[in-house]
Image (cartoon, rainbow, N blue to C red; front, side, top):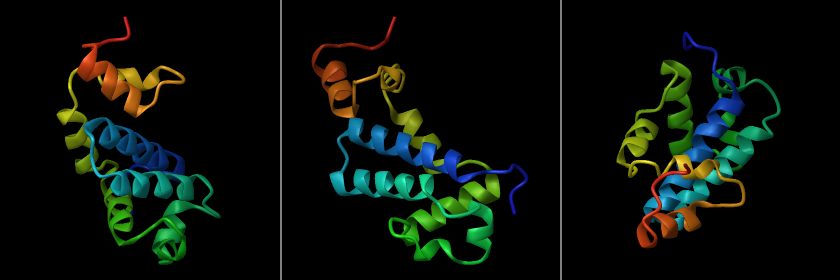
Amino acid sequence: MGKNKVNATKVASIFKEMADLLSIKGENPFRVRAYEKAAGALEHLPGDLEELYNQDKLKDIPGIGKGMLEKIATILNTGKLPAYEELKSEMPEGAGELLFISEVGPKTIKLLYERAGVRRIS
């Protein structure tokens, strides 16, 4: 499949960050939750991601729907996800950096950014 070996942990990490970024953006909570569920499913995947994909078994895992399956295929084939890169580029400068503060979630970051003008950790 892809040139770069991509594992379920990497894809789960991308999906988690997408959920956070979508939440910061104020996107539909159901869309955010879909990424969170897919990330959780991938974290507890019973086997190798690429093998399960090649065997057409990912579709049987709760939390991995058609849309997520397509995104996983893109990541497996290219090592990246254009929708993720685009989402990161749409974020205001420094917003993604705030995600690394423990105990601060996307909703709080949105408030810090929009109401208090917080742009950076340092």
